[in-house]
Amino acid sequence: MKIVVALSHVPDTATKIKIAQDRKTIDPAGVSYVINPYDEFAVEEALRTKEKFGGEVVIITYGNDSAKESIRKALAMGADKGILIKGDLNVDSLTVAEALASEILQLNPDIIFCGKQSVDYDSSAVGQMLAELLNIPSISTVVKLEIENGKVRAEREVEGGVEIVESSLPIVITAQKGLNEPRYASLKGIMAAKSKPIEEKNFETSMNRLIVNELKLPESKRKSKIVGTDASAVAELVRLLREEAKVI
Image 1: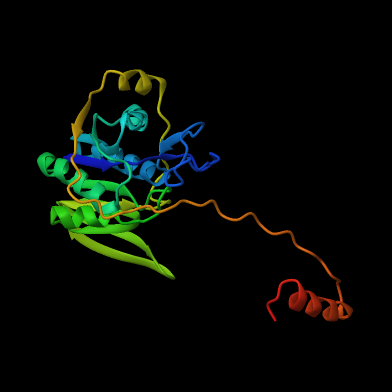
Image 2: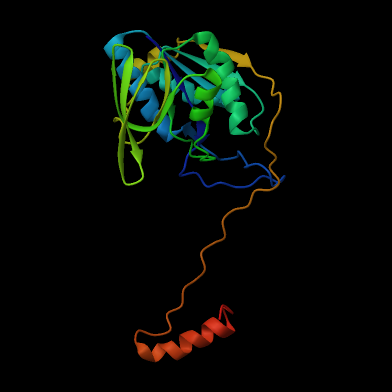
């Protein structure tokens, strides 16, 4: 079975983000990058699928040379090879999906796994766009997956419950937390990853639909003030709301 994982290389959520001088990008100095956490579930499910049916797991990502670090980590977990598509980083989700689709079409996979969203832009759109560009079905936010005789049966999270969906291969699956427990790379896997191939491709953006005007950090939390603990504080609270907060 040919299995593809579309992977994102993102800033670690524990990293303190600073905005660059251009006010349109983040300052890369001191920023640690990792595999997108939701993509770890995608990689694990791809490896389990390979272990059950045989075949090959290909990791594909869009970015620059630094993304090789995340590809190597996925290779150390057990994937077979990686593909890095190089292109402009300041692009929209559809451009990323177009870049991925251009390469995946040539691979002709049976199943494509993605994380449900990346933790940098949180658009939760690339997986569904990818399926549309490839003209195949997709099931998003999957928490349980069964594959048998070319058919898939998935449980996905919906508002207030779980929805069960059935479809056929090929398909795009976006992974939600709870789908599995991602494995750690073994020392043997880390050593083996050094010799696994990472193929590099270039993608020329035909039409970027995203323009970043300015980035801003969230405002720091305002300090709270306790004016009292019983009914006698009501008058003072009203005064402060009227004179200081100016909301009444």
